[in-house]
View 1 (tube, rainbow, N blue to C red):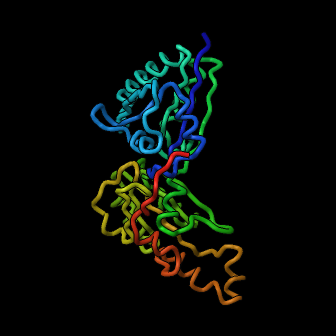
View 2: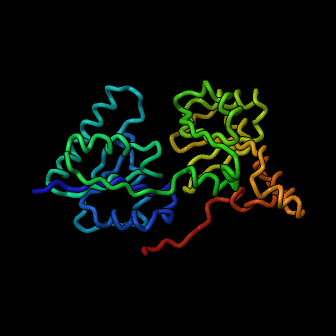
Length: 285
């Protein structure tokens, strides 16, 4: 019997209607859905995102895999061995396995480790990555603050692993995105204060989910511990994009530059800035 195929399927940042058509097609066809969760007693966020749109597929197995939110190599190694053994049993039976991940499978995703290990364990296995809408796309959408334009440069940093070089990054890049903040908020705010950029920062937690939270005065979240769905975006907007000088010459660009620079532009995406995610009708394509 030939071995099964492995899919890494990104299901987006949280809103069920941001799942792509390709993701739905692969998820419906898979024999097994591998669903990561943070503990034995926790629900799978990936399944929570998928369920309203995918529903229950007859005959499909849902395999819950536990990956603790820890840095201890022994705990993580044990969790991965169990997960690989469970996935391997299905793969070796010829079943197709879709590993479901929030956001995109290629950006700070648990699937990356599986993608590296699978060819070593199961030579010749077919692996397909189905991209998803990442939080890097969702956060600008809900805040109304574009990440980059023209000559602007972006730095994307996993904040939970330390922010020792944050001030250097703030100096070198036009936009800095801190993902997975963890316990680093006090140090982040202190660095922003020293750089004079507190008013250019916005804190976003669980973008596009029903629990979405946007905080534009980051001083108010100094004592909070961010989870893996929290981000801080610092957008200086000091270097105009290619079109802004032209628009200014036509009398159209003044408010645009100001609005982007502060992140509080009154004319730019007001509804997205101040509102909750809009209610949408869910449907199956």
